[in-house]
Length: 428
Ligand code: HAM
Image 1 (spheres, rainbow, N blue to C red):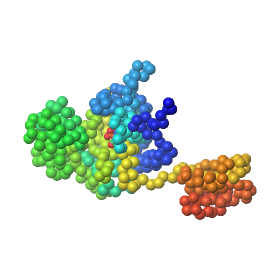
Image 2 (image 1 turned 135 degrees about the horizontal axis):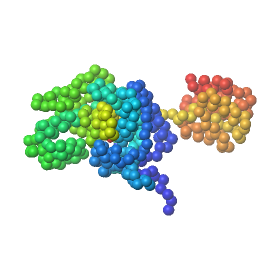
Image 3 (image 1 turned 45 degrees about the horizontal axis):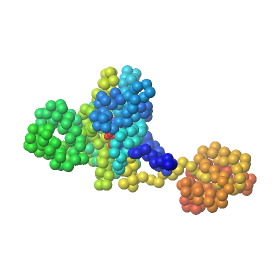
Image 4 (image 1 turned 60 degrees about the horizontal axis):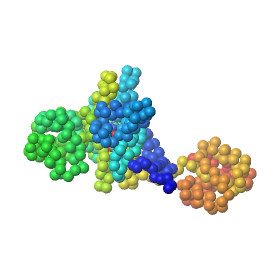
């Protein structure tokens, strides 16, 4: 029996044409976050299990981690998210670091999930986090930046929607409005988090098991259906978190370019570390109506590493959801390969042709050389199939005269250029 060629379930191979697209996306992401002063960091792919047990939430820890015991008997996890790692790094240098910190990374993460459109077991995730700012201006910056990222790919306001909620408000709702204890509050939050994945009847039935009667279930459903903070019932208008959401929405609306920002009490976010504002950004396209980014404020996580807490807010953006978004809205350009030029040798490889190509590389060009003995026509078709835009057919005449004919494969035109000017010509 021969060996399987498929990659591991839920993980992707990246052939050069796929990697090129990933590089294009990551370059844009880096550029977009660096314009806001964010600096790149990284951390190991393996972490001790404990850092997720504390606050990542039971679904991630119990159902989704790749956990194993290493040869030294340590319980190790392949990181399912970056937030605990970056919090650990900040805690380790809590007293040396000069806050605020604006940090980003693009790690690959592993989660044992059911693979489906836009969901893999291995995905890459842009993580953007702002450490050391407690004011709502931090929320403002982070959400403006999230929107700026999508805009930098050419997205328009109609293509996405920013949905905001507050954990503080949800705690108030559970504790004050519905008089739930901590355990039932948590059950209610988990249920709301699943609301879009289950039937309304099932939701109703399970809500009845947590709340004290149908009247409260109806009240909850009324609140979950709100899409405008101005319609919040009077008795909740000064509840914890509500004024902050109102202020944030009004601050964000100063930027007309930010896209649609709405209050959405269904946004719970599965992680236990969020303590205040939470948000997700959804693709509005009917065939891809899902969250591309998610994040929120998590002021207590750094402090769990035994140092003074640091107010923090951040978000993650998945590569696969971003790619689906770009494809469905036709925002993904054709990404050319890095190779600028193919030099097709007419004769067998010679020292003269090698030094000529070396001279061209010195001019800053990326060059693939075809030294095979197949026909020129086949060599040209090979260059075309690689997406290489320019070719030079190199024979003894060209070596002697140092004058080269450069053919543009995309429009069929040719130009004669002196050897020492080829780099300049192609870069223009
Ligand atoms: P998350 O909501 O789990 O948050 O992930 C953020 C984004 O990563 C999601 O909106 C989605 O686009 C993408 N994503 C997550 N899981 C998968 C998957 N299995 N396959 C493909 N894409 C996926 C977090 O991970 C938080 N730690 C983010 C954060 C950073 N919060 C504060 N700072």
